[in-house]
Length: 114
Image: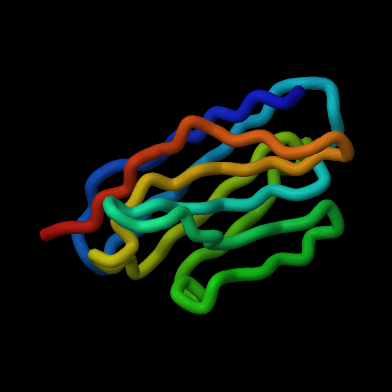
């Protein structure tokens, strides 16, 4: 079992930046980290992912603006978000995949507004 804790959300003006962090605890090696988001009244959507080899992938809506990375230790992940837009407003969730399944964090609110 893996427990995830996200941090780094907040209120930012359009064009600004935020960095989200995800910290995982537990004994299982983490193969993948993914970030999802859910805006009010909308379904949860995948944002970005990184596998253990370091390859990354992004949703078209954030490509070129967001960067996902893993910590050197391997049990942390970050999402650097630049040039934020009002449509990026959502609760952001960290997801970690292991050999036995996946775990979710509790989410962190990101609000982009002037």
